[in-house]
Every structure is written in C-alpha cells, then in structure tokens.
Length: 363
Image (cartoon, rainbow, N blue to C red):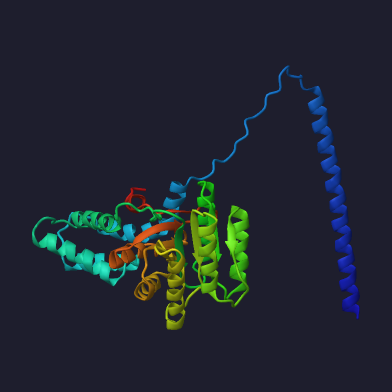
C-alpha cells in the first residue's frame, strides 16, 4: 500500500515538472518570436522584392530509372565478371568461376552452357587468350542474344489489333494491361479491354478501375461466368464499333493445370471466329523476381498455347534480371515490355540495346 502511494506521488511530481517545462518552453518561443518581429521592423525596405528561385525536382526519366532498375542484376552479373577480368590466361578455374557468375545472375543452365562453349571454342582457336578478353566476349554474346531486331508489337493489317495476356497470379498482368491501355489511349488509339479473368472479382474490379483512369472501354461479365463468352462479346464489339486495339485479360493460370491451359486455347479459338488473325500476339507476363521459375512458366505456356512475346515486370529490386537473357536465348522470343516501377509510365517497350548497354556500362 505504501509502495503504491509513493508511486502515485512520484507520477504526480513528474507531471508537475513536465507542465513547468512546457510553460517555460512556450515563454521562450514567444520571446524569440517577438525578437524576430522587432528585427524585421528595423530592416530597410527594398524597392523590389527578391524571390528565391523555386527548386523543383525534375521527374526522373525512364532511361535513368531503367538503369537503376537493373542495378542489382548488374552487380550480380557484371560485378562477378569484372573480378575475373584480368590478363591471366584462360584456365579451368577461370571457366568454373565464370560459370558460377552466369548462373548466379539467373541466365539458366542452357544459356550459361552456350556462353561457356563459345568461350572455350575461341580459346582453343587462340582467338582469345586472356581472361579479360573472355569477359568482353561474354558481353558481346549477351548483346547478340538479346538483339532480335525490330521489337514493335505486330499490328493488324485491317480492323482491331488483338493482344491476349496470359500468366500466373501475382505477376502484374492486370496492372500491365491497364498501363498499356493508357499508353495506346494517349497515342490516339480507340482501346477496348476484355475482362477475361472471371474467376476473381478483384481482378475484374481492378481492371475496371484502370480502364476508368485511362479513359478506355471495357467488356466485363459477372464473376464465374464463361471467360470465352467475354472474349466473344469483346471481339464482336471491337469489330462493330471500330476499335483499334483490343486487350484481353485472362485468369491467373497455374501453368501446371492442363484444364486451365485448355480453356486458354478455347479463348484463342473464340477470338479467331470473330477476328481470324486474332490474337495478333499472345503475351506472357512474368515476374522477374521468380528467376528460373519464369523459364519454367515460359516453357509450359509456350508448349500449350504458343507465345509471341513477353512482358517482364518488377525488374527493379531484383538481382535475377539475367533471366531475360536466358529466356530470350532458350525460346528465341521477344521481350516487348519491361516494368521498372509502379507508375503508369514505368512499363515501357523493352530495348535490347539499352538493357545490354546499361548492364555493362562503366559505373
């Protein structure tokens, strides 16, 4: 009991001290304010007010963001290679270290083996002799792998151009469609979006919100309705109302589920009934953070429905961006878009030249 009484008295005393401190602080603040006002009143008045320039931070350009976005991949791949770039002769230990560096950057076993084979052949022919020459050859080989020539998405010769987007849940597929829709709209195209992910209400709502932001139209149906019916209605509307672009969302397929893959195949057939050349491109959306799993997804989707290109999201913040090199090499497929942030302008057409240059440019 005595202990509790002392405890209460101590708390009361502490509160009183705090109150006195706050009052003293207010008094000091008021004194400083008065002194400042007095000084201003005594200052001479200038005939013209001098206004300090407003410093506004320039919005960061895409190229700058892209370079930052692949910085972790660069450190993983190029950092390791630069450690090997000496004038010593090429030997087995060097080749082992080189192989480890390439695998660590998620180029994949097949692409890594191809690069090592090229190094070994040129070393045997004495076309290269030093480790630094071998590293330069790696750079040239990666640039060659990525260079697929014209990297513009195919367009319909007449009528609407149709793009079908596929991919597993969580890779940023719906968001990518919304951003691409906004870009086409800003380019003056008449854009229609088909909400084919009818298994998740959240996906329909998210896509609908993106369409509102972008100012484009959408065809959507109730949850759990037939996604192929959505494709049919959207294709019909695109023809009848002269749309330039039709972007078709699909459910976040588990690439190991054959029945779901079969449904994707059905959706493609439905689109072809209305627009024979559709889809003009089937695009797989991949999350760069998944590394080698992205290669597995590409293999499965390519085998089941065929793919025309890739969109690689979340390239920023990952050291696994080398997976792009592995996928392009293994499947001889184009990367059309890359995402390096959350903003609407952070999903941009992929440039093999920019990727290679950014990866190997000197810091």
